[in-house]
Length: 178
Image 1 (cartoon, rainbow, N blue to C red):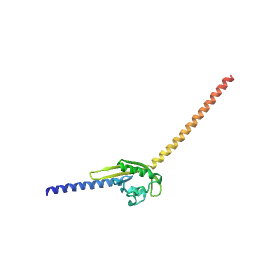
Image 2: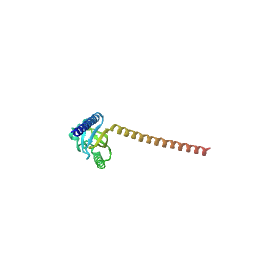
Image 3: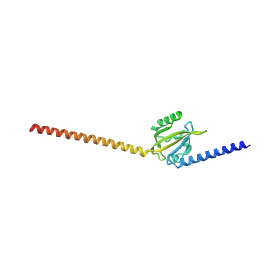
Image 4: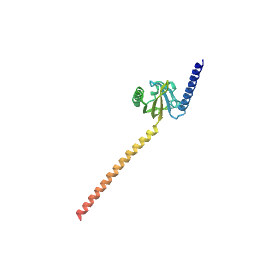
């Protein structure tokens, strides 16, 4: 009997530790200001946090399994899904940028990242999706400003060359007359 009691005590302690760890993970995942989700080893989503539900306006059941692809922009869907499936198959970390529909119909750019988390007897994917729409807009604005600046520099350079050519021509004319 002592061996049985020790085994049960150890198992109960391990189960309690696991429940506490899972509770900490879920609390952390709910506290983060980003979308958090987990997936089974085959890549099918089995849990999403409240932020993802609020963002999409969908119920949990609509986002599970392969439902998470529903809010992805049609132009980004094939690449995002192919990348996810390739990472699941190769067990490599996942990273992709795509537009994700918000509950009001607006499309927002997101950076999705997932890593494989392997425990003693459990394997899952743990993922986040961060809204990077403002960052993308700032990059686009900066690119436009750079293009405009390059065009102005080219125009000013051309104007300066033209002025220098006119000055050189005026000097030649002045020497020829003198």
